[in-house]
Image (cartoon, rainbow, N blue to C red; front, side, top):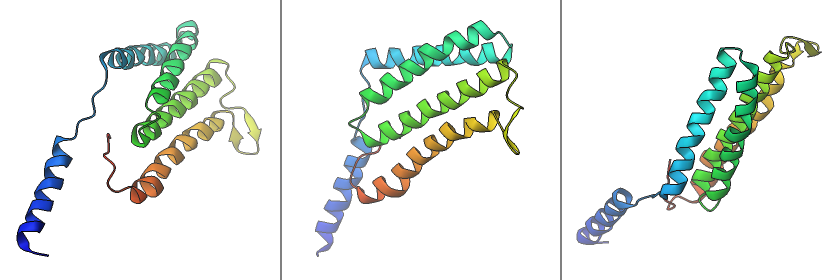
Length: 147
């Protein structure tokens, strides 16, 4: 392999890695921004122990999260991260409800409380990211990452 070929290949990969773009359509970006507003209001309701606000905001927050994950299903990087967010919101919402219902500290079994059950969707989100970073990404080194 001659030096000129190596430099050309390096510069091509360098150029493409910096020039690759991931563009979000405006209607998707607006939905993502609205999603953040709902998420903040849900957590504000939780923080202020204002149950109606916290519980009502679960639905638009979770639904938009699922829609975003569905719309990015063709990009594994985006899908895995958006699924992790969806499971995070699910765990967070369950935890909030368990506190609102004052069952969060009640035992389910031995030392396991109802609040600990929120770990199930939290860990599923972690597994989504672990799958992406430890399995999928190493097998597809030439795929462009969005995260």
